[in-house]
Length: 100
Image 1 (cartoon, one colour):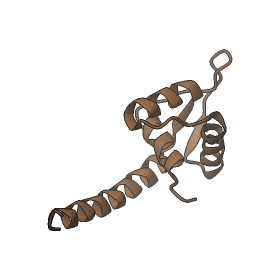
Image 2 (cartoon, rainbow, N blue to C red; image 1 turned 90 degrees about the horizontal axis):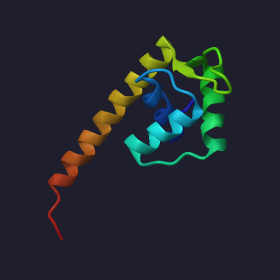
Image 3 (tube, rainbow, N blue to C red; image 1 turned 90 degrees about the vertical axis):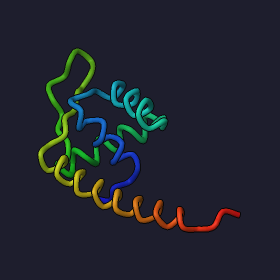
Image 4 (tube, helix red, strand yellow; image 1 turned 180 degrees about the vertical axis):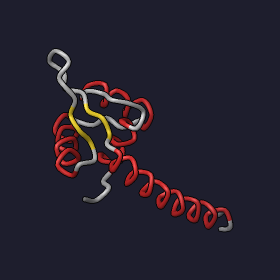
């Protein structure tokens, strides 16, 4: 599974603790400034659950909370470390460019 933006955002949100769909959407909007539509959010949740990176918890009334699995946390950490290396390289390279 590719680490698409919705996948990274959902896993990052769940790294803080279990959340249901609405809480995920609000958290993602607050830390990333990205508003995920319901189709995008629930599609990502379904793919993540199929992959074993998240698991559904018992429903809380009408809401179904999800939590990140150990495998999901490990794979997210590896992905974020790689992205951090790329971002650091890009920022370093931009700093040495002359301003036009």
